[in-house]
Amino acid sequence: MKPLIGISCCQKLFGRFGMLNHATSDTYVRAVVGIVGGMPVLIPANGDKADTACLLDRLDGIILTGSPSNVEPALYGGSPHPPETPEDTGRDGMTIPLVRGAIAGGVPLLGICRGFQEMNVALGGSLHQRLQDLPGRIDHSTPMQALAPIRHAKAHSLRVLPGTWLHRVARAREIAVNSLHNQGIDRLAPSLVAEGIAPDGTIEAVRVAGSVGFAVGVQWHPEYDMDSDEVSRRIFESFAAAVATYRSGGQSLSSSAD
Image 1 (cartoon, rainbow, N blue to C red):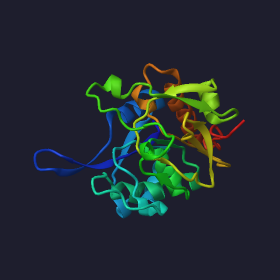
Image 2 (image 1 turned 135 degrees about the vertical axis):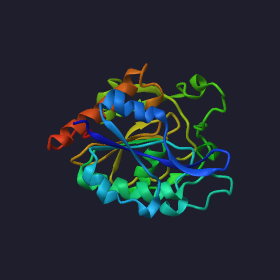
Image 3 (image 1 turned 90 degrees about the vertical axis):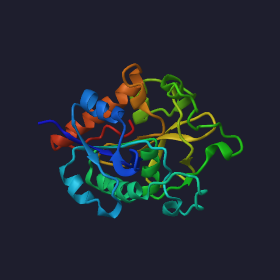
Image 4 (image 1 turned 180 degrees about the vertical axis):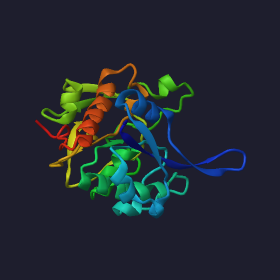
């Protein structure tokens, strides 16, 4: 049977009457079906009503997706967001315990963009709310372009640290990545190790140190160009290999450093 891969959803309003929906991008579904070879399971952003223990008992892997919304600052001791900042406390209430449970249970975990930030917060780190407002930082935010190829294009280089999971996946010391985020890591969580760093010093790839399972996060969106970019595709292939090991009852060490 195919592995069951959980994909985190966001709360979004749809339709003429603004009905509340739980949704995720088709790109993550295609990554699970086309590269991981799994059955996508959409996880509602239903806060403390989410039975994460039930999910973790059944899922073979988890992808934490990107989102326009910001992680609630109270979760990491930050100042309240400006009123116009999109939030999704229902998602926060589901993903934060899901991250902790997945790592504790060795369930393969891949965090992307907001999911990368959720990993840092769940493990005791903090976030900058707007990197573009900090001295010496580049603007990491989403380009306001109607054409997706422009919005999703490579935006800056990334220094890959040697001997890391990302180094093995990238097979290079420097790669180019897209950039569609405002938040970024401020204080790195104690159990996380940096794997890739942007030119302005922003940490953009991490792994959980000492984990017996696969637990990594990337700040960019490999799902946008997984069909054309070898590094992006190998990120999902590495996750798929960890899922296969987990299903076989082995301890996946594929995110550990050499």
